[in-house]
Length: 288
Image (tube, rainbow, N blue to C red; front, top):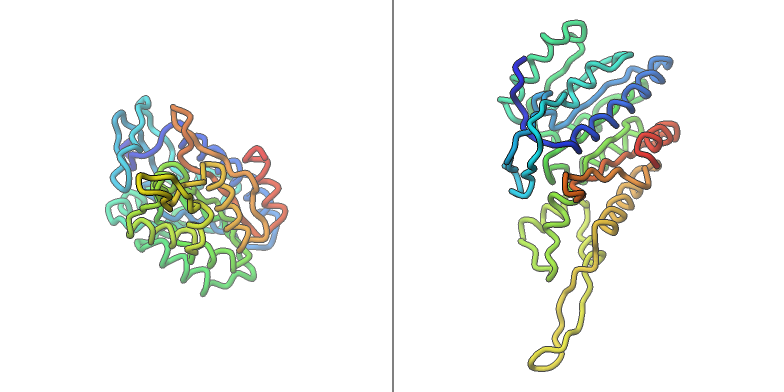
C-alpha cells in the first residue's frame, strides 16, 4: 500500500496508538488462554494508515486542528491490531466513507494470513454498533472496541449499547479540547445544532447545569442576570468519566490527556469495561 491516506494526528496520535497496542498485546495474550472467541472492532477505522502534514486543517469541525508537525507516516489502529500476536479470532473495521473502505480492503492483501478473518463494514458506526451489541450472542464471545472519531460523532446511545453487552472492552477517544470545550461558550450562548450534538454525546441535557451557573452582575441599569461558564478541562473530564460510570461498572478514573505540541489537551483516551482484570491492565497502560 502506498503511503497515502488518512491525514490526521500528530505526536499525540503516536502516543494514543502506542497505548492501545500495549493493551491489545496484553488482552490477546490473556484471551488466547481462554475458551472465548474474541474480536477486535475498530469503528471510524479510516484507511488503516494515518499521515500528518504541515498546515493540516480539520475538515470536520474546527480549523484549529491544524498542527505544525514534522511530516510523518503512522500506522493506524487497524494495521496495529493486525500486527498484534497472538491474533484475534476476528477483526471488524467499520467505516462510512466508501473511499476509505477501498483502502481498508487492501489490508487483506497486506495481511494474507488474516484475510479470511477481516470483516469490513461500510455503514454508520453508531447504527451498526447498536445493532451488533443488541443482536450478537455475547455468551461465548468477547471484544475490544476502539472508538476513534474525529470529533463528536459517537452518540451516547451507542455507548449504552456497548455497556449492556458486559462483554466489550471499550477504548474511546473523547474530543475534550478539539470540540467540547470550544463549544462551551463563556456566556452559554451555544449554537442550537451544537447544543444538540452535546446532548447526544453526553446522553442528557443535564451537562448544561454542570458547566454553567447563573450570575448576577451590576449593569448600567442595575443588576443583570446572565450565564457564566464554570467548567474547565478538568471538570469536563470528570463529568464525562462520571457519565461512563453510570453505565459501565469498571471505568478508568484518570483518562490519558493527549496533547498537541503546545501542550493543549486535544482528547481524552478513556477506558470502560465490565471486567476488573481488563480495568487493571488499562489503568497500568494509562499510567493510573
